[in-house]
Image (cartoon, rainbow, N blue to C red; front, top):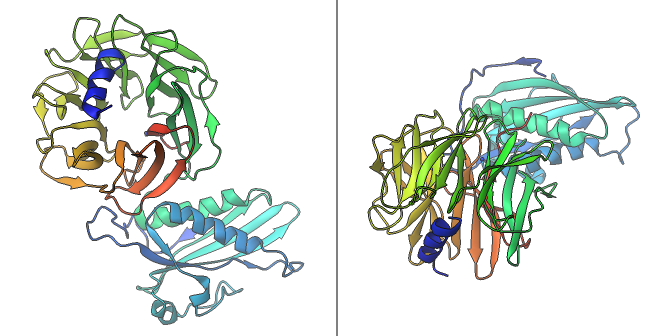
Length: 438
């Protein structure tokens, strides 16, 4: 079915232990939004085990460093250098000076070294991050972990590295929810940012579309045909309880939550035309925002709650529009391309990601709020759709469809370093990124 027909079909029928530190005051070393961005070369040494009883067979230090490498590689920001090129091994003495010129020769911009000691109660680790170019220490921190939770220790160090270099802790404690299709039926599934712990969320065994996270991470909203007609549900992510919040005659399509998680945007056709409404979650009070003869769908709030982006065919084809949160001052921002849908507002503001038709394929674009700067982020032979930003605004998750197969991918916000999150699982579609979990 062509995408234009799909748009009309959907809209008519069912229509995201600090010890001490040197020389870093929220300094951003890495700007991956730059068109000239290149991955940052970093050397990560195996942590040296200083425990007296440690033997060569005990590879805890290597396990920790490997975990750090894996987590940092997920960000798409770093070029992890091969240990075989290192000019020196990790020193056992934290006071030993680093020969910065030697590390510069292998192309390292940053260096991580560390030691560990272990006993029956757990592991104590210290990590030291160096700026090779400037020849200075960026941080020296200590960490403690249970021996059976090395992943937590590695992730904490990786998060501190990212925070130091980008002033953001990353997406390590986030999840992606998506629609998993099997034949004519579908349900929601969730997976961690690193591709681990895939779990089923719902058991509707029906048509499900448009899952949305609340910004506080407590709720998931979606549209389901569980009872034979489209209705909007809100599910408590922690305890699994569900309630139906919109089940009017005609279309009931889920939109995005407000930044304070207290309201939900909807597209309803209960008054004869597909219009955008806000729903107060506490008392289910509705407020109509649009009043136009055309189809208005896919509403999403700006990070500050002051504006709403949405899709309308009021100009003859689906395009992206922006209005104030009260429905006033509507303006169109996409003029290039005949079919532009699925807007997603960056958490940092400024840009909106969307899917647009190019040479009979759907690709992911970003555009600024004024509609002046357009960047095409994907350009392969697949249909790339349903973009959703990470909490930092530095990555985008999307679905890539080719032939009868689909996979969920993550790329940097400038389109670089795409990676597959999940594939070959019941045609995953419509991914949405969670907020950070504590």
